[in-house]
Image (tube, rainbow, N blue to C red; front, side, top):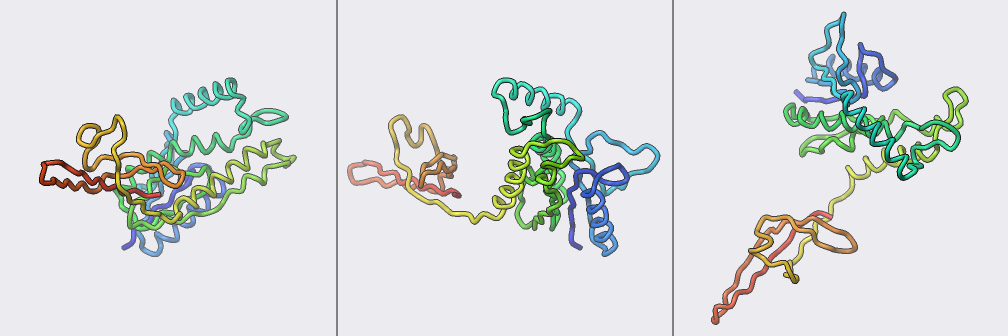
Length: 247
């Protein structure tokens, strides 16, 4: 039986929006087909049901009140110090898209430990709040990204007030980057390490350590994958250190 995880911002019977409703129906459909399905929310911290017993397969996470207060305080300080224009409206108030992403990823990070325990075959991830940024991509798991939210629809909407175009554009960019990074082909970088002044093998680094290499204009974290020591007839040593990393 395949194990399925559905991520959602919120989940019934607690109140939510269209994503919660859509993922509730997705959850019911998979359950009716006999799959082992669990739901993990990332904006439901400390929200408990009073009159109705919660589904044992629904696990609610999110930012705590203390974490939210800390985030709001840091954001307020940043805006005052650096005039944080991405989140600031030209006419009034503050837009919410980037703050929502920060809050969502606090909850998403808390889900990683549960995913390692449950070991699902498939994980469904919504785009709202870009929780996929903080969800660790584990081997042998298929990740399905679902597009629900288009923040650009809030621009110039007279019914819900003014929203920052820069803010919504940045949120859309974050959604796209999340998916592109997950499917970006990996390039394997291999090479030979040369000692530089102040850095010596056996003193500053050893076999298995991680070092930073510069290649093709990028800084790449590489493992020291092999070390070969040759001794000549005069007892002189030649050390051949090989690196391997992903670009």
